[in-house]
Length: 162
Image 1 (cartoon, helix red, strand yellow):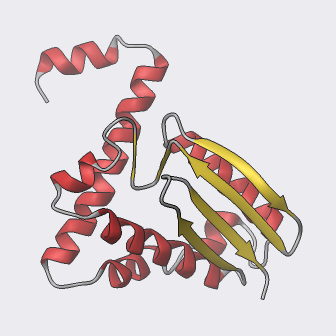
Image 2 (image 1 turned 135 degrees about the vertical axis):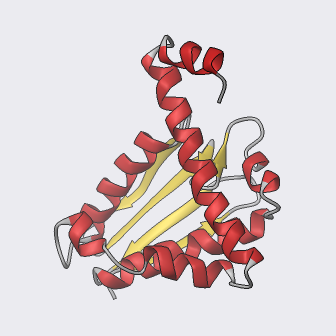
Image 3 (image 1 turned 90 degrees about the vertical axis):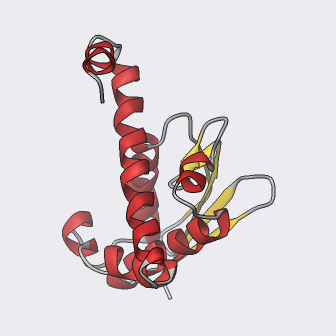
């Protein structure tokens, strides 16, 4: 990054700084996925490797309800993904579902899949990785978590207690 750009970012509003951090997170995570795919791993294998541990420590609970999990997950989405919209469809102890629109962990904004494309990744590869991340995370805390991307760009995330 050149000094002029760094200075401009530092003088920006908190929203501008937040967007820059969010962009860096997206760039870093998808860069890791692209590296793994380039080395012969599938997005599922990489998702399991990255997110297959640490859920109990992060959530602070070995067996949160679906409602508790989804509430925390929504906060993470709103914190790390600019412009995202979260709608709770169902919020019960054993079943919780939210719909994401205007972005997801794989991208946001007018060029939602631009960073994925930059790294040579397809939307399908990003969605496969994301699906496994949620599945592997949920497995650690006794929940079945699925992602269901829709043709209109929304995605349903559902957590159930099996």
